[in-house]
Length: 293
Length: 120
Picture 1: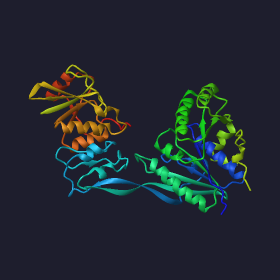
Picture 2: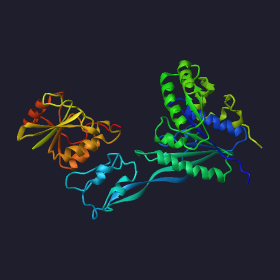
Picture 3: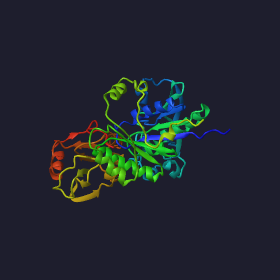
Picture 4: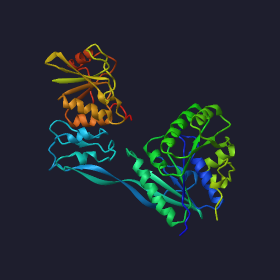
């Protein structure tokens, strides 16, 4: 086949509101203009919004995500209470002499309760936990959006399942670049998004909060052994020293600085980022852009 | 009748903890034997989620009839009412002793719906 390996890049950063999604869209656009076939994947499944920045609507579904939750068979239950003790999510409650009550909003779907029950009274029940949407934005750009059911406790598995479906889709469509736009934070859904990517950009801002959360994120990406570079957004505001301190501590590079720019903000709020051929330079990372023929 | 009060400290002059699920201690008294005081440290206080459920489980395991606290979250009030435990709310900061007195005099309001939002 001689097929090129698909490049998987995560856009993350720790703090919320630093411009992860904006940068994702700008980068996706740039890559398309340089001749790549790109899938932009919104894995901020609790609150995806890349579709808004791209002026799209979430209509066409290409799949669902699932999880298993416990269901009790009262004919088999002997009210022993072992499931209550086994649950690390505090999602099972039992009043004396009564059947246990399962609280789905606390359940992570880990499965310990049905493995623990000595009477086989708890059975896994498959439940839909999310939807996956697709938008073809232009000839060479697809947006894939994961959307978890509101109130779902554990969204990491949703991200993992979205990634799997995206990989299949990318192979089928000859997509050579996948961008994963992650949620803010360093918790399970972010970890799931970062697993197995080739490279990560950490988008941050020159504020104490931006620097602190960037530190947590870099700690995580080093643990996961993911090569990470920093994108400093709103670079002309705040104080760059906050970020430089963290960047030096974790020995990573600031790949690019994006100044706060009224035109960019305007395009962002009008859903017109794609019309903006934003020229941010990523030092020394040009090989990512040049399409090898 | 067994009464459980969420408490900031370990004795009857301690102040009632306004949070049920994330209180420091549970003090359990028997209205027939007021001299006997049982102190249980709330291990669920550090729980990331479901502190109200853990606390409710402690309460029902102790076969408590009445719980007094400042607030009850949605999950705790749901499971406690299902377990037939009555919940009462202290309107302002008061000691455990004062809360028990108010309960006896019928001055405490019974909880009919959750009085605090979900925290996690």
